Length: 396
Ligand code: SAH
Image (cartoon, rainbow, N blue to C red; front, top):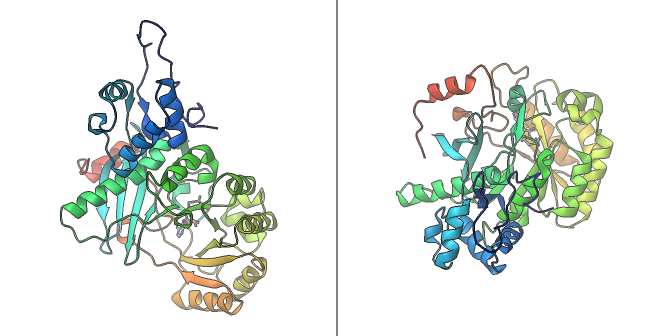
C-alpha cells in the first residue's frame, strides 16, 4: 500500500486534464509531507516527472527542512511553480513550548482546529531522544496512563507524525544557531507519546520509513523504536514490513494483573505476546526487545512478580526497563519506593536480564512518560480554555 491510498492520504490526487493543460479544481493542496520516497515518486509520475525528483524533494523537505518550493534550487522553475500551485509542505504547528530544568522540551502541536498532540525531546550527554505521538488520545484504556483519560479521537496522518520530527529538528537547530547551549540533535525517535502506534500502522510505517531514509533523517534501525501495548497480529506485520526496534509495554507478569493494567491483554494474553516477541527477535539476531514495566506501589512490584517476570521472559532476547510510575491528577496508583525498585531489579539481574531503571525526565513540565495528554476534541470547549491558560501562542 502506498501513501497515495486514501486510507492514509485522504485527498484524491486528480490527474491534469489532457490537451488544454487546464487543471480540474482541487479541493485542497496535496501535502508532500504525507509521502515517503515511493509515494513522492508515484505522485511526481502523475506530473510526468522522473523518479529521481522524489529523492531531491525528500531531501529538501526532510534534510534541509525547507517548506517553500521556491528555494528548491535543483528543480526546474516549471516544476517549482507547478508544485507551489498544487502542493504544500505542512507539518503540525507548534503552539507552545516548555523547557524543563533538566533540558527536556515539550511541544504542544496543533493538528487541526480542535486537536493537539504532545512531543517531547530528551537530551542526554550521548544522545537526543524524541518521543512522538501516533494518535490523538488513545483507545486502549491502560489504567495507569494519563492519555487514556482523554479517550480516543483519531489517528494522526503521516505528515502529522513525521511533522513532529521535522518541527523538533527545525526548532532544535534554530536554538543552536541562537547560541543556546545544546547538544541538541535527534539521534533516536521513540513512538512512546500519545496513542498506540500499531493501531495506526499504515501511517506509522510510512513515517518510520522517512525517519530511516538516508535522504531524510537517516536514523539507524535500532534508533527508531516502536512501543506497543501488545497487539499480537500487528507485531507480526511489523516484523514482516518494517525494520525497527520494538518495545513492549508489559507491566505485569501474569494475565490476572495484566488484564487490569493493560486491558488489551484479555484479547492477546501474555503467552501469545511472548511468542510474538520471540518471533520478532528471531528475525534478526542483533535484536533485543525492550520490555517496559511500570513500577506501581504494591500492585506489581513484589519480589514474586519479579520472579514471575523472569520466568515468562526466559529465552527471549530482551532487556527490561523499569519505569517509576509518573503520577497525574486522578491517578489511582502510586510510585514504588526506590528500595522496592532496587530489589525488583536485583532479582531480574540475578536471573540474567539486563535491567535498567528509567530516569524520570521533564516531570516539572508534565513531560514524563505517560503524562502526555495533548487535547482531544471536546464539545465543552476544554481545548479553548486550555489554550487560554497557556497564554498566547508562543512559538510558531
Ligand atoms: N501505546 C504504546 C505507546 C505509548 S505509552 C504503548 O503502550 O507502549 C509509552 C510508555 O509509557 C509505555 O510503556 C507506557 O506503558 C508508559 N506509561 C504510560 N503511563 C505511564 C505513567 N503514568 N508512568 C510511567 N509510565 C507510563
